[in-house]
Amino acid sequence: MNADDRRELVADAVFEVIQGQGIAQASLRNVASRAGLALGSVRHYFENQAELMEFAFRVNSERIHLRALDRLEELEQSPLPQDGSELVAKCVVVLEELLPLDPQRSAEAVVHMEFMLAARTGGALQDAAQDDYRATGAVVGRVVLQLLESGLMAGSPEPVDEAERLIAVLDGLSVRMVLQPGWSSAEQGQATLRRHLQSLLAP
Amino acid sequence: MNADDRRELVADAVFEVIQGQGIAQASLRNVASRAGLALGSVRHYFENQAELMEFAFRVNSERIHLRALDRLEELEQSPLPQDGSELVAKCVVVLEELLPLDPQRSAEAVVHMEFMLAARTGGALQDAAQDDYRATGAVVGRVVLQLLESGLMAGSPEPVDEAERLIAVLDGLSVRMVLQPGWSSAEQGQATLRRHLQSLLAP
DNA sequence: TCTTTTTTAGCACAGATGTTTCATCATTCA
DNA sequence: TGAATGATGAAACATCTGTGCTAAAAAAGA
Image (tube, rainbow over all chains, first blue to last red; front, side, top):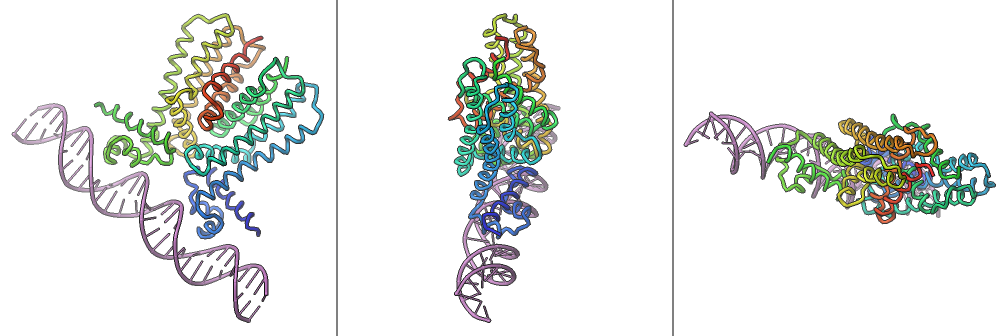
C-alpha cells in the first residue's frame, strides 16, 4: 500500500474521532487506536500532531470542494436554461455538495466546522483555513456568475454582495443542520436553499 | 461581594480564555489564573469543570438574548412604520444584537460558537444548547412576525420558512465575521443583513 | 542469501489536567 | 471574645498528552 494512501487512511481515522468525540479527543493515541495502528506507526507517517491535523484539514476541504467543482463544471459546460426553475435546479445541484445532506457530507461538515474553529487560535491551521475560504468563495462566486449571465437575475444587485449573502445562507444552514439535526432536516435545508436562489431571480 | 457575582466573575475569565486560546485551553487552572484566583477558589464556587462550563455557557447565551429581547420589546411596543425602509431599520436594530459587530459582541459570538460545537458531543452542555436555540428562534420568530403584521411582506411566504432562512443568514454571517474578520467586516455584515430584510418586503 | 530500508511496537520522560484532601486565613455572628 | 462559616491556598494522585529514543519485525532489493 502506498504511503500517501496510508496517510489518508490515518486522516479518515481523524475524521471518525472528531465526528464521534470532538476535535479535543483527536489525540495521536485515539487516532491510532481508531485506525487500528500503533502510536509509533502514526508517528512514522506524521512528524508531529500539528502536521497530522493540518493534513487532515486539507484532505477534508479538498474532498468537499473537488466534488462541488465537478458539479460546477457540469453546470458551466451545459447550456444555460432560460427557465428560472430549471436554472435554480441546476445551481442547487452544485451548492448542495456544500450542505450536510447525508451522513457522509454531514461528517465532512462537522469536521470542517471543528477545524475552522480550531484554526482561529491554532497557528498552523490558519493557512489551511485561508485556502478553504478561497475555495468556497470561488465555487459560490462562479455559481452567482452563472445566475448573472443567464440574465434572469432580479434588479441590479451587486454580484459580490449576493455571493456574500449566499455564502452566509450556506454556512448558516450547515451549522444548524449539523448542530440541531432534529430541528433542521435535510429536506428543510434543501428547500431553504432552493427558495433563496429562487428569490434571487426576477419574478 | 455576592457569591453569584463571584461565579459570574469566574465565567468572565472563562470567556477571556476561550476568546484568546480556544475552549480546549479553558482548564480550571487557566481560568483561575486568568481570574486572579487560586485553583481551590474556583473549585469552591463550582463543584467540577462541567458545572463551570455549563454555567458559563448559559451566562453567555443570556447576555446575548436578553439584550436582543430588550430591543425587541422596544420594537413591538412602538407603532409599526408603514414605510419599508423604516421597518427594516427597526428590525435591524434587534437582529444586530445577534451579530459580532463590536469587540464585545464578537467575543460573545466566539464563545457562543465554541460552546455550541462542544455541546454536540458534551453531554451536560446539550440542554443549554437546546435552550439557546429556543431563545434565538423566539427572537427571530417575533421579528418575522412584526414584518408579517406590517403587511409589507412580499408574496405569500411561509413565515416559518422565512424565519429559518433569516436564522441561517444570521448564523452564517456570525461564523464568517468571527472566523474571517478580514474578509467580512462589521459594515459588510450589517449591509448584508439589511439587504436581506429589504428583500423580504414587497418591491 | 544477505543487506538495506520501511514499518511497527514499546518504553520513558516531562508537562498538563481533573479531582481529592487537608490546612490556613478571613469574616461573620452570637 | 469565641465559634462557626466562608474563602483561599497548596500538596498529592491518577490519568492523559506529545515527543524522544530504542529495538524488533517485515519488506524490498541486490
